[in-house]
Length: 321
Image (cartoon, rainbow, N blue to C red; front, top):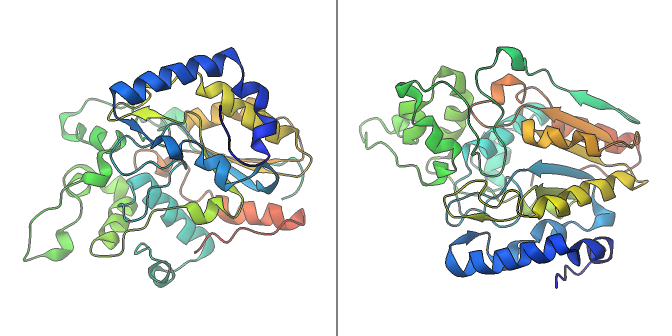
């Protein structure tokens, strides 16, 4: 049976003994035996191991893990050390930079070469009525709804998690043009921030691991904790949602305030589970390049989180390394 090694064991004991989880367990045994599944079995519960129940200051909710080799390691949006940050994560760093005034030099020093009170619920405008692109679920960047214009068809490759294995152009005479193919050939001017950020990553130290945040009390939780290689949402509806919804409910019942950060439509659907007025809900569009300009950029979730924590006498999060 599951043994996390902290307070989550007792809090989720009944859930891990439920028929739903036992059925999920049998499903996972077969999946890991017959297919390549991410993350590694030993990393499935890293969000719980790195962030104990009593230590949670904020929760960032993703959908399911990245679907490419070497990326997923049990923390939403995070990738393993030495792996190129995908576009959504790059946009998170971009917003962190703009929100907190962290310079490119600060990121280089940290290994990255990229540039109020009670019961508040802050919604950053996303003008969904005018957007032809639906919010992308985080974790795998896999759910896209847009026109089937052939010129833009390759964008789906990015959103399906292929962004960390993107090839580069071979324009040796103009190295400044050697940005990832998907950005150079596919993304429009609307995604220029992502293009600039990815360009800054070229030739720099690769580090998109967010473990340092998890150890400070930022629970990086996906709604679904496993996925089959190359198949986003392949483990959706198999039982993980029962466990992760329970996590949100348990935190909602807690007296100590928590900041719930919900990016994208799938995460925002969980808002109904957060009813306690002592907590803060921050919601906006997803950081995917396809939706970041619909309200993620400029939403300032990092400074708002720290302002709320400070007002409630809780130590702020050091978003920079």
